[in-house]
Each structure stands twice: as structure tokens, then as C-alpha cells.
Image 1 (cartoon, rainbow, N blue to C red):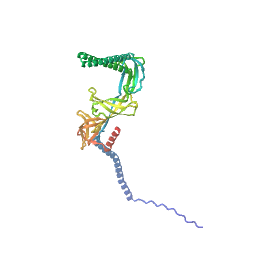
Image 2 (image 1 turned 90 degrees about the vertical axis):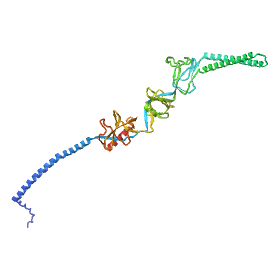
Image 3 (image 1 turned 60 degrees about the vertical axis):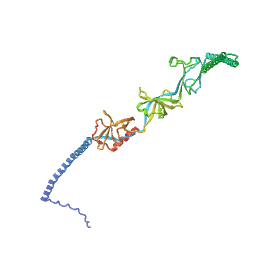
Image 4 (image 1 turned 180 degrees about the vertical axis):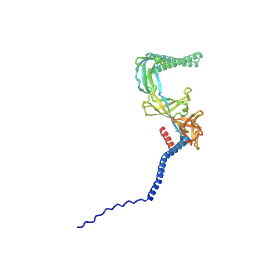
Length: 419
């Protein structure tokens, strides 16, 4: 039996012995690599220290360049609105207001309308019992009848004497006397008729009536109360006022407009009212008339506004806020209040010229819109106006304008806030 041939493991080769020349070459390589590695490490460490310094120096230089000039935001003046709302306080008053007094003396026999009652013009409010006046009227009518009878007899006598005078039966003197007596009796009859009419008119005042459609706001009498003709108006302790009536289906609102805005208020100007009792509700009204004169004490124009109140929502004597729509035919430019500078020589606006230098312009302020003001004179539509300029800014100073996106965003935010 034969043994198969097994693969033999390769025997490691014997290490090659380095010659002295090879050892010298390796030592020379190490001598060259070590300085190079040290130089690379030093360069890396140097770069790690210098590069941040270079970046910091560049940033510092850029920051110094940016802070060398004042950075500002600009805005473009816009056209002011033609309509301006002027808010003023107002007093609501009835369109008609009357105190009802007795025109004849007597006792209250009956009253028909109490406080809060709505009455019509001519409606009876109370009856006054006047027995003495009734008797005087009967006597006056009797006197009228007597005067009429006397005139009738005197007139017929005068006519007969005129007939006899034609035949010379009586003298001219006697005929004239009879004619004169007839004329006197006629005058006496006419006087008696006037007295009857006067007393009849007084008797008609026994019924106290409403002068116009309205609401009774006061009743100061009761059955059996003695009232005197005319009362004593103006004396609170004994005024004699029977009723007080107010017309409330239409109201007057009195408002005092400042002198600066008086020229924009005229009859027909649109108005709406607001009250605390009805938040969010507006009552349409119209300027009906004005005093056409400035009060020298308050320097205001008294304006009267009429408002329809047929639903009875508004109450006379209430406080209200009047919103006047003032229209300007030629509105000027407007800028935010933050763009104004108040200098000794007047109100100033800082603008930027084409050379990025500040130009201060003295302007004239027109209407005031709160956060915005109208510039009546001194500003052009093409001016670049500096918003929020510092108090130390001066004319001729070079500035740096902020980015366009930032400026537009700021102006858009301001307009959105204004609403």
C-alpha cells in the first residue's frame, strides 16, 4: 500500500539581509521626513490660530464700515385721504320742547295724559273748571245783545230823520245828531262783540291741549289743584307749569366744531352717531344748520345735527359721540408722526438726496389723523423721507439706507397698523 502525496507547506523564505547601504538610505529618509512633518504640524497649528483672527479682523472691518454711517429706514410720502372723520361729543335734545301753562285761572277738573304718554297735536291734556269766567261770558253776551238793540234803534231813528230832512221837516243839526248817535251805538255794539270774543277765547282755554305731537315728560297738576293764568314762568318754587312736552320722533344734536375744522362742516355733511348704550350701532344723521359764526370764547362753531328717531331708540338729554365726515377737495401728502422733527425753526422732515446725504425740510402741518399727519407744504411726492430720525441728525450728514426689503416691510406694517 502506497501513501498518497500530501501537499507540502511552503517554507518561509529567509529574511533578506539589508546591506549597509540600505540602512544608510533609511536613516537619510527619516532625517528628511521628520522636519517635513514638524513643518506641516507647525503650519496647521499656525493656520488654526491665524484664520480665526483673519475672519475676526474682516468682520471687525465690515462692522466699522457699517457703523461709520448712520443706518436709516426711508418711506415714500403717500396721498392723504380725501375724507377725514372728526369725532366730537354732542348733546341730544328734542326737536321741539314746550312747557304747558294755564291760560285761564280755575281748578283742574280732570287730566288725561300722564308722564310718558304719547300725544297728538290738539289732543286734550286737562280740563280747567272756571265758573267765574263762564259767568263773565254770559254777561258779555247780554251786554252785546243790549248794544245791538241800542244800535238798531239809533240806526232806524237816524234813517227817519234823514228822510224828514229832505222835506225840511227837521233841521240839519238834529239830523246830524241822530246820525252821530247811531254811529256811537254801532261802536258800542262792536266793543261788546270784541269782549264776547275775548271771553270766549279764554273759555276755550279751559281745555289744555298739546301744541304738537310728542311725549309728556312732566305732569305737575292733579284734580282740584288751583291754577292761575300764565303761572309764574322762571320761578322753580311756583312755576305754574302744568305739563312738559317734547317732540322725540326727530331729535337735534348740538355739537361744537373747532375753528380749524369749521370750514369743512356745512349743511348736508354726512354724520353718524354712536352711544355707549348701543355699542357697535351707528345712527345716520345730517348736518341741518350751523351758527355761521365762531364763538369768540370757545373758538368753536355751533352745529345742529338732525337725526330720525321714530323708533324712539335715542333719548333726549343723552350724551353721544358725533362722527363728522370732512371732505377735502385737494388732499396733500401725509407722513407718519414718527418722521417729524421739532426744531426751533419749526416742524422739520429729514429727507435723503441722491448723494445719500440728509436734507432737512421745514414743513407745514395740515390735518391730523392721529398716527399720520398731512403735510400741507414743504414736501414732494418723490422725496425719500427718513422714518424715526434721531434728534442729533443734521443736514448734509451722510447716511446709509437700509435694505429695500426691510424698508418696504416697515412701511407695510405701519400701513397695516393704521388700518
